[in-house]
Length: 168
Image (tube, rainbow, N blue to C red; front, side, top):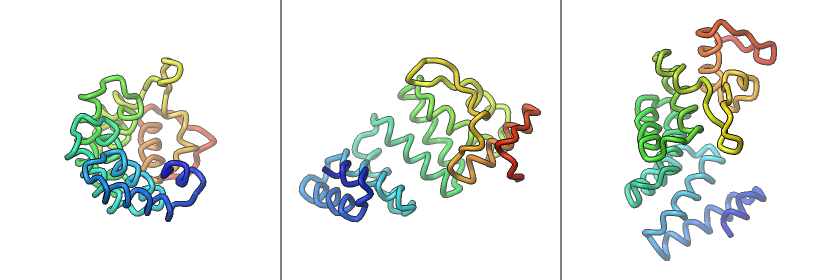
């Protein structure tokens, strides 16, 4: 029900739904996780982070909890913490392309070009199993931090794409 509310853009009701579910069952990690996603959609990042942290503390093996925690931390500019979260997600699921890509972006933003390049170049696409050179998608990067890391990657590789002309 909460997911349907989120998908239709009824964020307030989705938030209320997940909070009621948590009140009924305080160990229901899916409700915490989905609430974090809704709050992230609404750019309520500090609250979203709090719920992601609860997910990870209740269910440390939940890979998406670590990944989402890293994603939120990166958006908050807390790069070293984000890197640690992405690394925990990858430890639990080594073939997690999105975690590798976002780890690479965070590493690039933190100035670690070597490791950043290793994690962003040729990341596999889950649906096809084929490599996806993420530096080709800079023009569609949704967040300014992703655009910055794409610029850094492009500079490191000596590549310029006309679809992405925003300087750092």
